[in-house]
Length: 149
Ligand SMILES: Cc1cc2nc3c(=O)[nH]c(=O)nc-3n(C[C@H](O)[C@H](O)[C@H](O)COP(=O)(O)OP(=O)(O)OC[C@H]3O[C@@H](n4cnc5c(N)ncnc54)[C@H](O)[C@@H]3O)c2cc1C
View 1 (cartoon, rainbow, N blue to C red):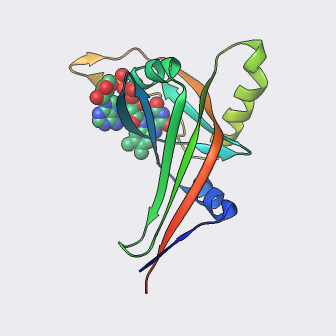
View 2 (cartoon, rainbow, N blue to C red; view 1 turned 180 degrees about the vertical axis):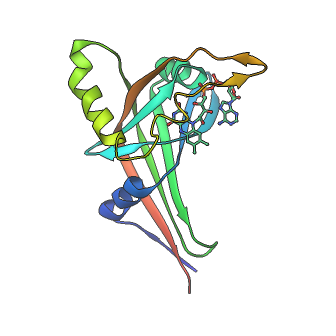
């Protein structure tokens, strides 16, 4: 197997077609990773999130990392890593245009609001149903691919 860098365009193509991403964030030295869905559009990844652990931590430390992959076999794969800055799009006039844009991007996916906005029972208790749009301003994209020999 050979491993090579992906071009920026090939990396963005993977970001666009990946159905699930891993969002990494950190607070007080403790790293965390959760599966999430995103839509890529010009320098940003747009998402829709429940209020919870990850939003609290990303507010405190907005430096985040996102990984997506396409793993055909252990020798044939593509992975992309994004470093960026978490930005909330709250329900205010200032963010109205960005929220509308995020909503339009997500409409491409069926049932895009799931699982960011569904009834969730955690430790026997129903979690409050609060959700919001956010985006990640992309600072760096790198891609690697494995090529079978
Ligand atoms: C394919 C896929 C796509 C998803 N897309 C989205 C999305 O677009 N938006 C969205 O908000 N959520 C999405 N989720 C759910 C997401 O992974 C989180 O489980 C959820 O958002 C709750 O996160 P939280 O930080 O609010 O956790 P809380 O409810 O605050 O949970 C607290 C604790 O629960 C544990 N926990 C939370 N989530 C998980 C998990 N997934 N697995 C194991 N332990 C966990 C952690 O230890 C965390 O500290 C997706 C999940 C999958 C599998």
